[in-house]
Image (tube, rainbow, N blue to C red; front, side):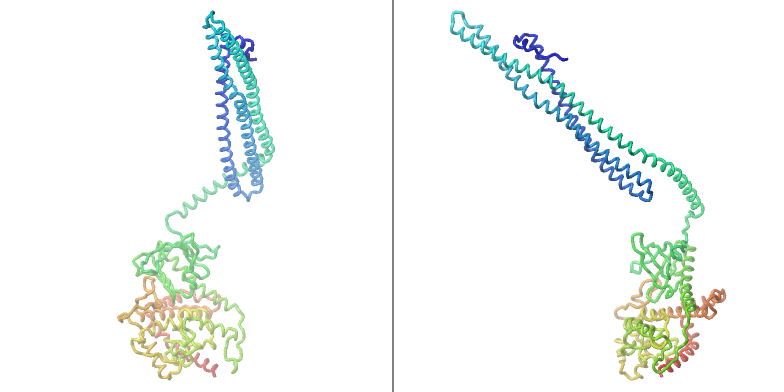
Length: 616
């Protein structure tokens, strides 16, 4: 046991006591320094622990998000959830450890220092001051002359009082030093014991927690062994597949992707030229599905339909283009130029597009052949239509829904009941008779209420319509000073107007005529709208396209005439003849029309007789 200051030696104030007192004061000063260092380092440790807990909390949250991707594995997910909960409890245990450390070290030692050290400092100051007064009183008492009895008596009394006060302060100072030294020993040991006990509790709780997780750890260990074996097998399989694809397909050549699983006929990348004046090219992903041509500009954008119905389109190579491997799709509304990466891909797309067009017609014709046919109804004066009554108002409503189709294209009479399949316009009954006199090579008339209409014919009637056609065939009426006849005009005036309009094409804007440019329903060779092109050529292109559609219809009808399973349409000789007719329709439509005039007129005469009989 450490020695303490002797109170009797304190009264004597001997040199040995003074030496022992100095040693005590040095020990107290050193102890104060060490206590302050321990408390500061403990504070830093607690702060670091709190920062660790904050980072650990964020880490566990991120780990929980990562584990959410394993929801499909029920057993694994159950084990991981237990681990997650265990780690969360360990975090709470560590938080309690830091709190107990703070109380055990910082608070207890701070209490020790604050309770004794300030009082010791004040007492020592008074002890030193009284000691100095004692030295002064002793010196004065020694200097008094023996002949001055009164001064000697006063000096003796002052010395006695000062020594007595010094002894009281010395005893109090020694008591405080002895008490501090005794108390600090107990407080320091108690503080360290509390800290160690907090550590013991922390690790004991952690051990109990991990022991409870031991069954889950064994289960997960078995799962990891199985997953390790499966992973090695899967990795080997992926390496073999990678090597196979690399040897078979990774030749640098683009592939033609056929995906029957998702209903696509063909899909892949093509360059598409913009219809703007800049004529820029952009690489897009194209797909043929459900008789439509669909494309996506990027994976972030939705797919857009470029051509809604391939039955109304024609496809051909664009060998006149400066760029290689180009081909174009044409419809009544627009023309689009596309470019493949190679000649092989170009031919694949041409075959796929043409095959999709043929398949669309074949599926529709097969559906018609498999449907039961109703017996022809008996015609009467009250019902002259050979079709079901419920379909006739639908055909009329669709036809009159086109732009400008509510009035006759040539005289403006309201609610026309006839239409020209060739021109895509609606006309009144009087103008329809004049159109018949022109010949079917110029205008083929059908009744909107008496005749049957195909879906593509109705669609063309809606796409073209009176407004579009009149924009081409009546472009120069004001320049010519010609006034369009009205519904009340004489038949002779209407007949002259129709012949000038469709036969002579007198009012079509020529390329050399002045005035503002007009936009027509056609496309140039680059696939852009021909806003400044010759309208006469525009009209001829529209007619040429209609001839192509009639050729496609003829191909379909020839297949139908031989039955569903006939191979006539697939015969090589027939395909050669059909290809010659298609080329003629593209390059010399007038020659093709002349060859069909006689047969068309006979068909028109027969149709006129039937329609007239129905009307009568």
